Image (tube, rainbow, N blue to C red; front, side, top):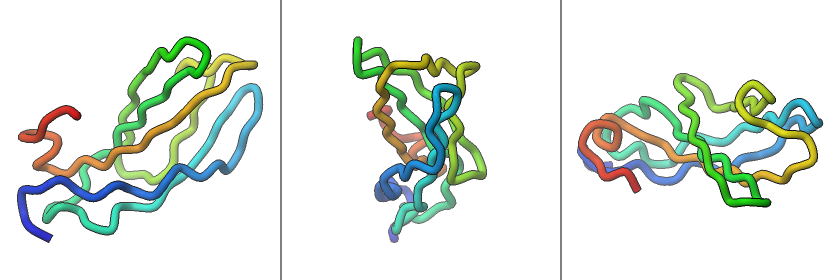
Length: 96
């Protein structure tokens, strides 16, 4: 682990609960934090039907609860991507 580098990828999202009103999943923290503490996780949510993507931020948790208040629409399929951000990524890194 070198300070000032990107963290490795966190574990793939694992479904915990799925219904028309909730998609709840969790993930494992990255193996390598890039030399500094993980400060947040960025959750990219893509609706498969039209490829629209929204981004949510999760702080101090390894779980996410996607609900209608956050954009969940019953009858649609979604793809989720989780990205770990440490101090370097959040304040100095590229937004890739």
